[in-house]
Length: 228
Picture 1: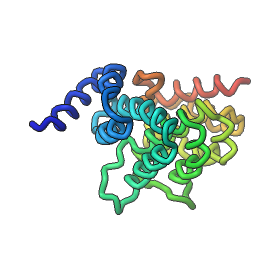
Picture 2 (picture 1 turned 90 degrees about the vertical axis):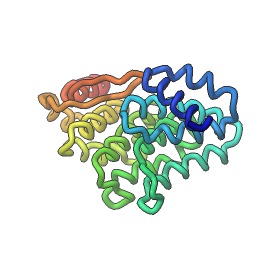
Picture 3 (picture 1 turned 180 degrees about the vertical axis):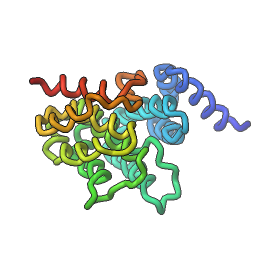
Picture 4 (picture 1 turned 135 degrees about the vertical axis):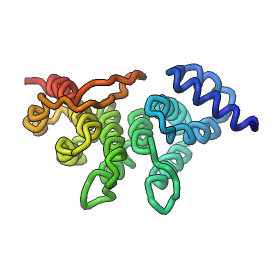
């Protein structure tokens, strides 16, 4: 096994164990660009927990990268967006989540790229047909809304996220409901109330932890954030 492959396996094992801090300590010894490249390869991991820990780590690396060189941050965003293009030939797992995580950490990138992320669930935009990617976009918008709710709401995200609440896949419904809870838009309240009895299983990654829950519980928590 080559040194590069061995390093990637080591990083993957740490991420799978939830040891993101150890990964970041290890990557502190290399340039931010190299660290981002290493993590990009792990954002597409099949294991959901590993993937989301990689997304979190990439967001933290990208924050430092963009702070030192905004153009380098933009290039990273473009690479993630390109991976969602069929012509790229890439496996785009985790790309929408990574876009949201990075934008949550850098408002300048958020202002430039939020419309592109929203367009991925807009039927007249760059709509993604694949349900797991739709769930990823919803999660990415929720993560972004945690940091900049007004920015996301002002770009019309509520309408498109609400449309995902009737998706056949529970994971998509759950991620959309989770995201709507951070937008603080009462227009979503009625649709969220319609999900309170939804016992479809979903997983929500938040604050470094993966929570296995149901769509109904996520919807109830989202409504609580919206207030009376």
